Length: 106
Image 1 (tube, rainbow, N blue to C red):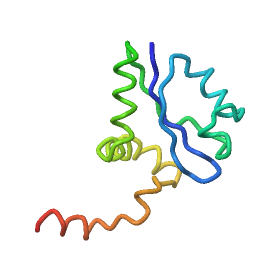
Image 2: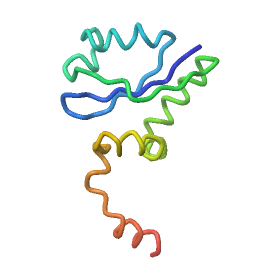
Image 3: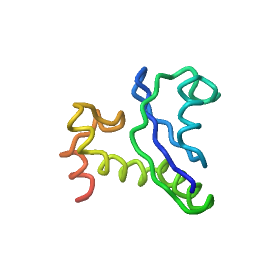
Image 4: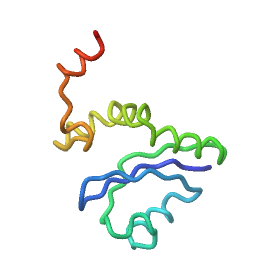
């Protein structure tokens, strides 16, 4: 199995998306500061993961989740979690639903 995962920095609230074959080991590496990209932004919380049968699917899923559509998917998927914790995704903070609706109708 391969895992695509999302970490959230408890320091700055930013997200990190990755994939791995060993989720527990990789999360431990992130929390111990052994990953170049995440060592200065910990501590981390694992907020989402998916299991894939092969590596190509996990890589493709990682790429999708980093895209604009993927971020929207995660926002909707994690809405219940974010609502319960009183937290929102960073890109949703300045979201104005009225302005978004106006843009779609023009």
